[in-house]
Length: 105
Image 1 (cartoon, rainbow, N blue to C red):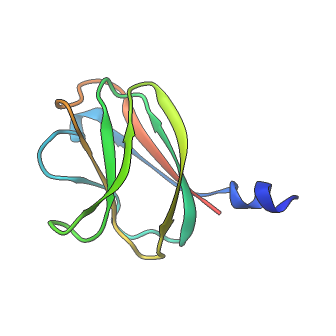
Image 2: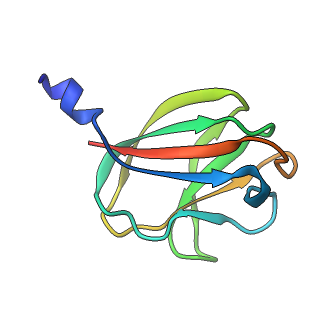
């Protein structure tokens, strides 16, 4: 296995249903990550633009990426082991689909 392949190997996945993705408070995807990572893969099958954040509840720091509906992408970002990773909708509450987040590494 090459270094690039090992860096993109899935380590931990969590899924949030659309009913929990709204423009209000952030919704936890991982309350505490099991692994640290340098990249995450996000698949947005909701009907809204979403964003992710890292940090404790009410102290989240936005990840500077928007994930459009129907998009699957890899985001290069360092997330420490034990970190809280959360999401929320940007433009309006999501009503269909789900958001799947996978820690890579």
